[in-house]
Amino acid sequence: MIIVFGSLNIDMMLKVEHLPSAGETVKSPYYDWVPGGKGANQAVAAARAYGIPSKVAMVGKVGDDGFGTRCSNNLKKEGINCSGIGTCAIPTGCAAVIYDDKAENQIVVASGANTEADSNQIPNEVLEKGHVILMQMEVPSAQNWALIERAHAKGARTILNLAPAASIPRETLNALDYLIVNQIEARQISEKLGLKIETDAMKLAHSLASNCELTCIVTIGAAGSVAATKDKGWRMAAMNLGDPVDTTGSGDAFCGAFAAALHHDLSMEEALKNASIAGSLACTKAGAQTAMPLKEDIEDHLDQLPDAEIISF
Image (tube, rainbow, N blue to C red; front, side):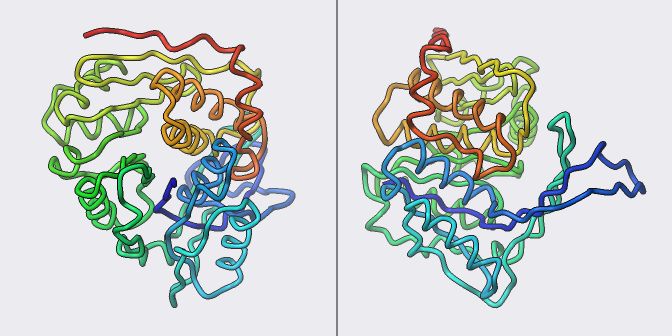
Protein backbone atom coordinates (compact mmCIF):
# COMPACT_ATOMS: atom_id res chain seq x y z
CA MET A 1 0.00 0.00 0.00
CA ILE A 2 1.00 3.63 -0.55
CA ILE A 3 0.31 5.67 2.59
CA VAL A 4 0.25 9.43 2.07
CA PHE A 5 0.74 11.45 5.24
CA GLY A 6 0.06 15.09 4.61
CA SER A 7 -2.22 18.06 4.16
CA LEU A 8 -5.83 18.38 3.07
CA ASN A 9 -7.03 21.81 1.97
CA ILE A 10 -9.75 23.52 0.06
CA ASP A 11 -8.22 25.59 -2.75
CA MET A 12 -9.92 28.85 -3.69
CA MET A 13 -9.02 29.25 -7.38
CA LEU A 14 -9.02 32.81 -8.75
CA LYS A 15 -8.01 33.55 -12.35
CA VAL A 16 -6.67 37.04 -13.11
CA GLU A 17 -5.28 38.87 -16.14
CA HIS A 18 -2.01 39.41 -14.30
CA LEU A 19 -0.66 38.51 -10.88
CA PRO A 20 -0.87 41.34 -8.34
CA SER A 21 2.23 43.18 -7.21
CA ALA A 22 2.67 44.40 -3.64
CA GLY A 23 -0.25 46.61 -2.61
CA GLU A 24 -2.15 46.02 -5.86
CA THR A 25 -5.77 44.87 -6.04
CA VAL A 26 -6.62 42.72 -9.04
CA LYS A 27 -10.16 41.65 -9.92
CA SER A 28 -11.14 38.11 -10.83
CA PRO A 29 -14.41 37.50 -12.71
CA TYR A 30 -15.14 34.31 -10.77
CA TYR A 31 -13.72 31.79 -8.33
CA ASP A 32 -13.95 28.09 -7.76
CA TRP A 33 -13.27 26.07 -4.64
CA VAL A 34 -11.80 22.63 -5.05
CA PRO A 35 -10.15 20.03 -2.81
CA GLY A 36 -6.38 20.47 -2.56
CA GLY A 37 -3.43 20.29 -0.19
CA LYS A 38 -0.14 18.72 -1.25
CA GLY A 39 -0.92 15.53 0.67
CA ALA A 40 -4.36 14.99 -0.84
CA ASN A 41 -3.12 16.04 -4.29
CA GLN A 42 -0.35 13.46 -4.18
CA ALA A 43 -2.75 10.80 -2.91
CA VAL A 44 -5.00 11.36 -5.94
CA ALA A 45 -1.98 11.40 -8.25
CA ALA A 46 -0.72 8.11 -6.78
CA ALA A 47 -4.14 6.45 -6.93
CA ARG A 48 -4.71 7.39 -10.56
CA ALA A 49 -1.18 6.50 -11.62
CA TYR A 50 -1.25 3.19 -9.77
CA GLY A 51 -4.47 2.10 -11.43
CA ILE A 52 -5.86 0.48 -8.29
CA PRO A 53 -7.04 3.34 -6.03
CA SER A 54 -7.67 1.07 -3.03
CA LYS A 55 -3.90 0.59 -2.80
CA VAL A 56 -3.59 4.22 -1.63
CA ALA A 57 -4.48 5.54 1.85
CA MET A 58 -4.63 9.16 2.99
CA VAL A 59 -3.72 10.13 6.55
CA GLY A 60 -4.10 13.64 7.96
CA LYS A 61 -6.51 16.00 9.73
CA VAL A 62 -9.49 18.11 8.66
CA GLY A 63 -11.85 20.33 10.60
CA ASP A 64 -15.37 19.34 11.59
CA ASP A 65 -16.77 21.50 8.80
CA GLY A 66 -18.02 21.51 5.23
CA PHE A 67 -14.57 22.01 3.78
CA GLY A 68 -13.34 18.89 5.58
CA THR A 69 -16.30 16.85 4.39
CA ARG A 70 -15.69 17.94 0.81
CA CYS A 71 -11.99 17.04 1.03
CA SER A 72 -12.70 13.55 2.38
CA ASN A 73 -15.59 12.84 0.04
CA ASN A 74 -13.52 13.77 -2.99
CA LEU A 75 -10.80 11.30 -1.99
CA LYS A 76 -13.40 8.60 -1.38
CA LYS A 77 -14.77 9.17 -4.89
CA GLU A 78 -11.26 8.42 -6.14
CA GLY A 79 -11.36 5.09 -4.28
CA ILE A 80 -8.74 6.15 -1.73
CA ASN A 81 -8.82 4.70 1.78
CA CYS A 82 -9.74 7.59 4.09
CA SER A 83 -10.02 5.75 7.42
CA GLY A 84 -6.83 7.49 8.57
CA ILE A 85 -8.24 11.01 8.19
CA GLY A 86 -9.09 12.47 11.59
CA THR A 87 -11.12 15.54 12.56
CA CYS A 88 -10.36 18.31 15.03
CA ALA A 89 -11.78 21.60 16.30
CA ILE A 90 -9.52 23.70 14.06
CA PRO A 91 -11.03 24.59 10.63
CA THR A 92 -9.89 22.67 7.57
CA GLY A 93 -6.83 24.07 5.81
CA CYS A 94 -7.47 26.52 2.99
CA ALA A 95 -5.35 27.92 0.15
CA ALA A 96 -5.90 30.91 -2.12
CA VAL A 97 -4.49 30.12 -5.57
CA ILE A 98 -4.21 33.11 -7.91
CA TYR A 99 -3.20 32.25 -11.48
CA ASP A 100 -2.99 34.00 -14.85
CA ASP A 101 -3.18 33.16 -18.55
CA LYS A 102 0.54 32.28 -18.56
CA ALA A 103 -0.08 29.55 -15.97
CA GLU A 104 1.99 31.44 -13.38
CA ASN A 105 0.56 31.49 -9.87
CA GLN A 106 0.74 32.94 -6.38
CA ILE A 107 -0.43 30.81 -3.45
CA VAL A 108 -1.21 31.64 0.18
CA VAL A 109 -1.94 28.70 2.49
CA ALA A 110 -3.75 28.76 5.84
CA SER A 111 -2.66 25.50 7.50
CA GLY A 112 -5.70 25.09 9.76
CA ALA A 113 -6.34 21.50 10.85
CA ASN A 114 -3.15 20.34 9.14
CA THR A 115 -1.25 21.62 12.18
CA GLU A 116 -2.89 18.82 14.16
CA ALA A 117 -1.78 15.97 11.86
CA ASP A 118 -0.09 13.30 13.96
CA SER A 119 2.19 10.55 12.65
CA ASN A 120 0.76 8.23 15.32
CA GLN A 121 -2.42 8.12 13.21
CA ILE A 122 -0.41 5.57 11.19
CA PRO A 123 -0.05 2.27 13.06
CA ASN A 124 3.21 0.33 13.00
CA GLU A 125 1.69 -2.59 11.11
CA VAL A 126 1.39 -0.51 7.92
CA LEU A 127 5.02 0.54 8.12
CA GLU A 128 6.29 -2.93 7.29
CA LYS A 129 8.39 -3.82 4.25
CA GLY A 130 6.45 -3.61 0.99
CA HIS A 131 4.64 -0.38 1.81
CA VAL A 132 5.58 3.09 0.54
CA ILE A 133 5.18 6.18 2.73
CA LEU A 134 4.86 9.52 0.92
CA MET A 135 5.19 12.83 2.81
CA GLN A 136 5.36 16.58 2.14
CA MET A 137 5.92 19.65 4.33
CA GLU A 138 2.44 21.08 4.95
CA VAL A 139 2.07 19.26 8.29
CA PRO A 140 4.28 19.70 11.40
CA SER A 141 7.87 18.85 10.51
CA ALA A 142 8.45 16.87 13.69
CA GLN A 143 5.64 14.48 12.73
CA ASN A 144 7.33 13.75 9.40
CA TRP A 145 10.68 13.16 11.11
CA ALA A 146 9.08 10.76 13.61
CA LEU A 147 7.30 8.88 10.81
CA ILE A 148 10.50 8.54 8.77
CA GLU A 149 12.35 7.10 11.78
CA ARG A 150 9.55 4.61 12.53
CA ALA A 151 9.19 3.55 8.89
CA HIS A 152 12.96 3.12 8.57
CA ALA A 153 12.99 0.86 11.62
CA LYS A 154 10.03 -1.22 10.37
CA GLY A 155 11.17 -1.55 6.72
CA ALA A 156 8.76 0.62 4.70
CA ARG A 157 10.24 2.75 1.91
CA THR A 158 9.94 6.51 2.51
CA ILE A 159 9.63 9.42 0.09
CA LEU A 160 9.79 13.01 1.29
CA ASN A 161 8.85 15.89 -0.99
CA LEU A 162 10.55 18.65 1.00
CA ALA A 163 8.16 21.34 -0.16
CA PRO A 164 7.87 23.96 1.13
CA ALA A 165 11.58 23.79 2.03
CA ALA A 166 12.52 23.47 5.70
CA SER A 167 15.46 22.48 7.85
CA ILE A 168 15.70 18.73 8.28
CA PRO A 169 17.92 16.87 10.78
CA ARG A 170 20.86 15.00 9.27
CA GLU A 171 19.86 11.82 11.10
CA THR A 172 16.40 12.02 9.51
CA LEU A 173 17.89 12.42 6.03
CA ASN A 174 20.10 9.39 6.72
CA ALA A 175 16.97 7.35 7.51
CA LEU A 176 15.10 8.57 4.40
CA ASP A 177 15.03 6.57 1.16
CA TYR A 178 13.98 9.18 -1.46
CA LEU A 179 14.17 12.97 -1.29
CA ILE A 180 12.29 14.98 -3.95
CA VAL A 181 13.04 18.72 -4.20
CA ASN A 182 13.27 21.48 -6.76
CA GLN A 183 16.53 23.34 -7.39
CA ILE A 184 15.79 26.12 -4.92
CA GLU A 185 14.89 23.63 -2.19
CA ALA A 186 17.99 21.53 -2.97
CA ARG A 187 20.26 24.57 -2.59
CA GLN A 188 18.59 25.57 0.68
CA ILE A 189 19.04 22.08 2.14
CA SER A 190 22.66 21.92 1.00
CA GLU A 191 23.38 25.28 2.60
CA LYS A 192 21.77 24.29 5.90
CA LEU A 193 23.78 21.05 5.91
CA GLY A 194 27.00 22.93 5.29
CA LEU A 195 27.57 21.29 1.91
CA LYS A 196 29.16 22.94 -1.11
CA ILE A 197 26.46 24.89 -2.94
CA GLU A 198 26.34 23.64 -6.52
CA THR A 199 24.57 25.44 -9.36
CA ASP A 200 24.18 22.35 -11.57
CA ALA A 201 21.11 20.29 -10.68
CA MET A 202 22.87 16.94 -11.12
CA LYS A 203 25.77 18.03 -8.90
CA LEU A 204 23.26 19.18 -6.29
CA ALA A 205 21.44 15.84 -6.39
CA HIS A 206 24.68 13.86 -6.23
CA SER A 207 26.00 15.92 -3.32
CA LEU A 208 22.85 15.40 -1.26
CA ALA A 209 22.63 11.72 -2.20
CA SER A 210 26.26 11.04 -1.30
CA ASN A 211 26.25 12.94 1.97
CA CYS A 212 22.88 11.72 3.20
CA GLU A 213 22.90 8.12 1.92
CA LEU A 214 19.67 8.39 -0.05
CA THR A 215 18.32 8.81 -3.57
CA CYS A 216 17.85 12.50 -4.38
CA ILE A 217 15.57 13.71 -7.16
CA VAL A 218 15.70 17.34 -8.25
CA THR A 219 12.89 18.62 -10.46
CA ILE A 220 13.82 21.38 -12.90
CA GLY A 221 10.50 22.46 -14.37
CA ALA A 222 10.20 22.32 -18.15
CA ALA A 223 13.72 20.86 -18.32
CA GLY A 224 12.56 17.70 -16.54
CA SER A 225 14.40 16.22 -13.58
CA VAL A 226 17.62 14.61 -12.44
CA ALA A 227 18.19 11.93 -9.85
CA ALA A 228 21.25 10.54 -8.12
CA THR A 229 22.53 7.97 -5.69
CA LYS A 230 26.13 7.87 -4.49
CA ASP A 231 27.23 5.91 -7.58
CA LYS A 232 24.69 6.60 -10.31
CA GLY A 233 22.71 9.43 -11.88
CA TRP A 234 19.77 9.87 -14.24
CA ARG A 235 18.65 12.76 -16.45
CA MET A 236 14.97 12.72 -17.38
CA ALA A 237 13.38 15.13 -19.86
CA ALA A 238 9.90 16.57 -19.51
CA MET A 239 7.29 16.39 -22.26
CA ASN A 240 6.73 19.34 -24.57
CA LEU A 241 2.97 19.71 -24.69
CA GLY A 242 2.77 23.31 -25.78
CA ASP A 243 1.77 26.22 -23.55
CA PRO A 244 0.74 24.99 -20.08
CA VAL A 245 -2.78 25.65 -18.81
CA ASP A 246 -1.96 25.50 -15.09
CA THR A 247 1.24 24.32 -13.38
CA THR A 248 -0.32 24.14 -9.88
CA GLY A 249 -0.44 20.35 -9.56
CA SER A 250 2.59 19.41 -11.65
CA GLY A 251 4.97 18.73 -8.76
CA ASP A 252 2.34 16.74 -6.87
CA ALA A 253 1.56 14.68 -9.97
CA PHE A 254 5.28 13.90 -10.30
CA CYS A 255 5.56 12.77 -6.67
CA GLY A 256 2.40 10.67 -6.68
CA ALA A 257 3.26 8.94 -9.95
CA PHE A 258 6.80 8.28 -8.72
CA ALA A 259 5.43 6.64 -5.55
CA ALA A 260 3.05 4.52 -7.63
CA ALA A 261 5.89 3.38 -9.90
CA LEU A 262 8.03 2.43 -6.89
CA HIS A 263 5.18 0.41 -5.42
CA HIS A 264 4.86 -1.35 -8.78
CA ASP A 265 8.59 -2.20 -8.43
CA LEU A 266 9.50 -0.37 -11.63
CA SER A 267 13.14 0.52 -12.22
CA MET A 268 14.43 3.99 -11.41
CA GLU A 269 14.48 4.86 -15.10
CA GLU A 270 10.86 3.74 -15.51
CA ALA A 271 9.74 5.51 -12.32
CA LEU A 272 11.30 8.80 -13.42
CA LYS A 273 9.75 8.51 -16.87
CA ASN A 274 6.28 7.82 -15.46
CA ALA A 275 6.64 10.71 -13.01
CA SER A 276 7.86 13.10 -15.71
CA ILE A 277 4.95 12.27 -17.99
CA ALA A 278 2.47 12.67 -15.11
CA GLY A 279 3.91 16.04 -14.16
CA SER A 280 3.79 17.23 -17.75
CA LEU A 281 0.22 16.04 -18.35
CA ALA A 282 -0.96 17.74 -15.15
CA CYS A 283 -0.04 21.10 -16.73
CA THR A 284 -2.58 20.59 -19.53
CA LYS A 285 -5.61 21.05 -17.25
CA ALA A 286 -6.68 23.62 -14.67
CA GLY A 287 -6.55 22.79 -10.97
CA ALA A 288 -4.58 20.23 -9.05
CA GLN A 289 -6.50 17.04 -8.21
CA THR A 290 -8.71 17.44 -11.26
CA ALA A 291 -5.62 17.52 -13.48
CA MET A 292 -3.96 14.32 -12.24
CA PRO A 293 -3.54 11.84 -15.12
CA LEU A 294 -4.73 8.26 -15.08
CA LYS A 295 -2.43 5.26 -15.46
CA GLU A 296 -3.70 4.82 -19.03
CA ASP A 297 -2.87 8.45 -19.84
CA ILE A 298 0.70 7.97 -18.66
CA GLU A 299 1.12 4.69 -20.54
CA ASP A 300 -0.24 6.25 -23.75
CA HIS A 301 2.62 8.78 -23.69
CA LEU A 302 5.51 6.46 -22.83
CA ASP A 303 6.71 6.32 -26.43
CA GLN A 304 6.68 10.12 -26.72
CA LEU A 305 9.51 10.63 -24.25
CA PRO A 306 13.08 9.25 -24.41
CA ASP A 307 14.28 7.00 -21.61
CA ALA A 308 16.31 8.57 -18.83
CA GLU A 309 19.98 9.11 -19.57
CA ILE A 310 22.09 7.08 -17.11
CA ILE A 311 25.26 8.61 -15.69
CA SER A 312 28.00 6.90 -13.67
CA PHE A 313 29.94 8.89 -11.11
